[in-house]
Amino acid sequence: MSEALRAQHLAATGTIGPIGGLGSWTYLKRVVVGTGAASAVVSVYDGQSSSGAKIATIDASAKGYYDFECVCKDGLTVVLSGGNADITVVYGG
View (tube, helix red, strand yellow):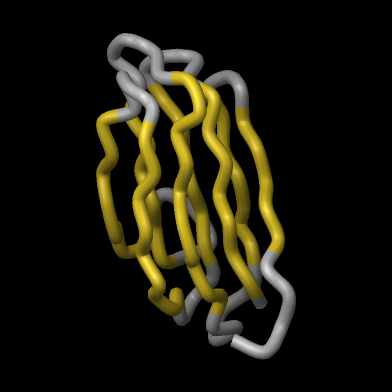
């Protein structure tokens, strides 16, 4: 990946994205759960919203990190629901 990686953070339920646009080829490096929360779930989508193709569902009740090293062809959207976990999404354009 020749471009610098960037990061976005959520500490409460919400949405990151959309990052990139249709046909933008957004690179998803990693999702980090810094602090877990009971019932928290991170949903990762290749698309402009949660109606895009689902890439992953992550149980965010405990801290950890999840490497993806993948390209999202229609942009990237990440949704944190169910609890106020602390997450960071690392990506590139």
